[in-house]
Amino acid sequence: MDLGNEYLKIVRERFESVKDLGDKTISQLSEKDIHWKLNEASNSIAIIAKHLSGNMISRWSNFLTTDGEKSSRNRDQEFEDDVSSKQEMITIWERGWNILLDTLNGLENQDLLKNITIRGGRHTVLEAIERQMAHYSYHVGQIVYIGKQLKDESWETLSIPKGKSEEYLQEKLEKRS
Image (tube, rainbow, N blue to C red; front, side, top):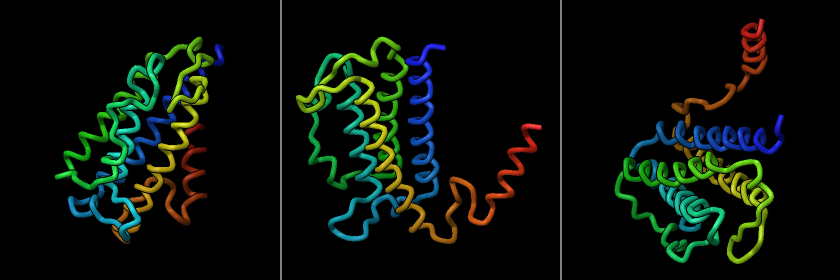
């Protein structure tokens, strides 16, 4: 087994899993829900999705050859809630994820220890991947948390329902038998 290629396979699956949590949350939300925020210091789901996409486009476009903070990026604008619809937000969201996943699919074992730059700082590709995994997981966690609060009793859980851990484990064990 080749460790680098195994890592790339696993990390692609992890990014897809993080995206899936966001997708499943967004699918439960209304047009109004995506713009809700607790207060002026908070971000709506629309803003978080826009920020994630802007970050992904900047970081993962020409990943191995240009600084991850592109001059074309307007990070401050990512925090303005000017998304007109849930469909527009989904289009923005998908664009970022597609660039990320396409770039990951093009990476090879020998790329992992290459150096890239983000805001002028040097990082190995491996470090950059881990940095972005933490960043995206953090923000998708925010999306899930906001969605869960908004949907309250109508929230469809994305993981093992409370009080169902033992039942879930038994089902998994029975499937393996």
